[in-house]
Each structure stands twice: as structure tokens, then as C-alpha cells.
Image 1 (cartoon, rainbow, N blue to C red):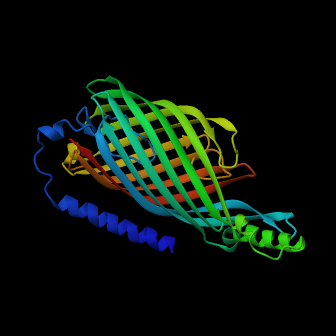
Image 2 (cartoon, one colour; image 1 turned 180 degrees about the horizontal axis):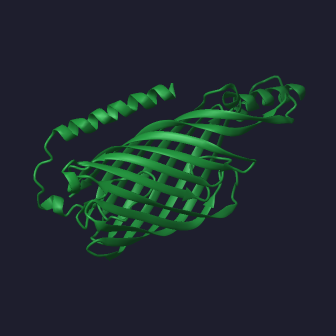
Image 3 (cartoon, rainbow, N blue to C red; image 1 turned 90 degrees about the vertical axis):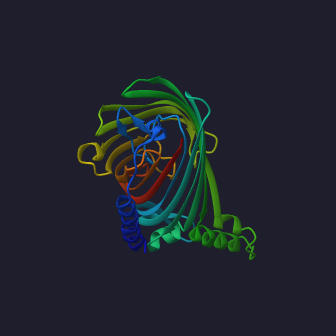
Length: 329
């Protein structure tokens, strides 16, 4: 089903981009020349993986879905004893909203909200992982440190968190059996094992930058470090660090065609959106409409390799997103 959604989303997004290409972008006005994503004659494209340093009042939304495979899950017998492990697959849908308010020419405040729904797609994942939903939030601030003709840099502070709710059929069945063995035939004490929840948090400080060597190409990058709490780590904090970079290629200055290509990479020392995992490496490719400086639309395809503490096998995840961004001038 998710594979079908993936191929439905792709042509729908392409059709939307082609529709925009058919229209005339119109002459660039004074407002467009002051667009925050326009630096050194180059128009940067938005990314859901690597944040940019631009101080702007902007709204961005992303929606999509994908699959993850090679997830190692433990298998237990009716006595609660571990008898082995199995490889599970899940499908997921996600939705994200990001808003930034420019307080002054050098300061911006931002808010982000996100949601992810996940469902097992084979027997092992349905029994062990069941259905889960994750809700995330973020608050942050950017302060412009340097702004030159073709490069700029900003310092950042961010607080992020996620709450995970999971329905585990196998855990519920095991609890019923345990309670029955103890003489409790009601389901009241077993219902708590059906729904499990946890949360994590991040407190981060970092820098973001952008550089334009030529109007047709630009680069962004970021680094942040701080402390975080794992979903399963209770109140134990651990140090975390994230970094990433993008390459933006805009064909409009070269050929007049308002199409841009985005290449990106990110590494998280501790993945923020999943439990029982470790470091993750994300690789992305995007195709965007670059005909307007205040508006961007495009498709972003990404692939992830995620470490698992219990095994040397890595989780393989792929997803596709439709991104929209509008900068208020």
C-alpha cells in the first residue's frame, strides 16, 4: 500500500511543479530582490533535513511517507522469555509544519510541529511493534552573526521533543497470560500494557551557514551539539551532536529554466524520531521550482541508514515528501 502511495505522490507532485512551470514567473520586483533565500545572486531551496541560516518570516510544510526495513525485534514465548529475534518492516506517514518570525534583521524565532504514524507491514512487526504515533515540537532562535555579499552565518539555540505512543498486541497478550496465571481474570491490569508511551528531548546550540560561489550553485551547512534524553532512557541525559550540508544547483541562471536540484546529507549521533536506535545517516535528493523568490515547491526523496544497538544490521529507511515554503516579504 505504501509503495502505491509513493508512486501516486510522485506524479502528483510532478504535475504540480509542471503546472507552475507553465505559468510565467513574472518580472522580479523590489520585494523579490530582498528575498531572504536569495544570496549572492543564487536562490536557495528549502530542506526538511538540513536547516538554513536565513532570518525571515516564513512558513514551511512537508508531507509524505515511506518504509523502513531490517528492524530487529525481540521475540518472546508466553512465559515472557526471549526466544529469538526477527527482522520487521514498517510503513509510515509524516506531516510537519515550521514557522519562523523575523523579530529584527538579525534575530528570528521559530516554532515547529510534526506528526508520524507507523504501522507494521509483516507479521513480526505487527505483533512486536503494532501501531505507533509520534508527535514532535520545537522552539528555537537564530541570530545572524555575519552577512556578506555571498555568504552568511547564524548562531542557533533550539529545544525539541517528541512523544511516542505505541500499541503492542504481543505485550497485551503476555500481560493477560501473566495476570491469569496470578489468578486475575480481568483485563483491567492488562490494558496498561496495550498502550505504551515515552518521550525524548533535545537542548541544542549551534551554527548555520550559507555560501554562494556562483549564481547557479550554493552550499549550506550546520552543526549543533547539546544534551538529549532517549525514549527508553528515563531521566538519563546523553550528549548529542548533529551536522549536515546541502548543495543547491539552480538551472535558471544557466538556461532560464526555473528548476533546481538539491543534494543533502545529515548525520545524527542519536536519531530523534525513533526508539531503540542510535546514529543515523540521511541522504537526500530534491527537485524544486525556482521561478519565484518568495515561494518554493518541490519533491524531496531521502534514504537513511540507522544503527541498532542490539545488532550490527542497520535499519534502511526511504521516504518521499512534498515541500512547500513561503517567505513573507
